[in-house]
Image (cartoon, rainbow, N blue to C red; front, top):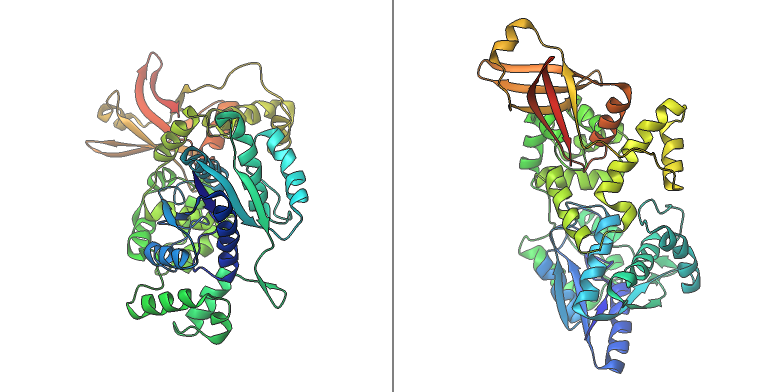
Length: 432
């Protein structure tokens, strides 16, 4: 059997709070004759950002602090929100035979369990209020309990107090900031927060030029500066408003200028980092959709977070418009269990506005590229042998709302194809 420690931390870098976690894990592991195994995030952090220190350096830090073995977690955090990555990571650990999990919390473990009950009952682990203390620990505990019904086993949680110095929580973000502001020198204020082994490894990495890790800014800015609306809208975690602000904000010369555009679109820091990571790695909606459908088949994704449920929610909200409900009111009713009698449409036609001289260039089966134009209208672009044909889509109100909600879902892929009907040319739209 393995023993898990600190998966919710990226260990970027390992500080004394992390060392205390590993120390507690070592204590429990020695009692049981098990290993201390670190499931360490690789590639991108749990908060969807590039790492300050490399995976290799962070692995050495964790091993020096007392861990027995490192297991890399990669391929998730530039594709998915934490509502999805947490179930996937916990399932991986349970399947590996992990029996115990150690985490740090500033509130009584009983309160963690009480907070988690509501989320366990609902079976949905997104939207945990930000004002809840230790909200990520609550998510981990709740998902662990939820997955018991899938695996018939779960990890035992061990909680220790959060690492603090002079009453202040140790923050990896502040450690990294101080090192950067000190011209990549480790000031005494930071060194006292780190195990000696971490200081040594950081100094070696800095000398070798491995710190700090950064984005591939050249690729990121080129895509944002040159890509069409429909290309950007096909990238996961970009909605129509984000795409519009990105296009309006061109020409980008630095990452912080992109952040300004995303803020205008209502993106917070976490979603902005995820969106930028998705652009940097060219992560499509189709890629995310198929990844999650695979995990759904394995019974890992909670029912209320499945792709079909996301589509069903969009259908319900669009159906409630005729009842006079706002989107937020309809969304609330859906979470309370309300449903429509009819099922969501996964395929339907939209009309076009075409000029007579464009008709001869059209061919059945031609791929149509969906986008939202600068006036906010749903539209498509056809690439013909004679050039591009652009047209807004003609849809009944309910279907127009439904399609826009799917566009703004950020993860549901939409396919569009030109078809010939008795009444003329149409765009056949396919969901998922």
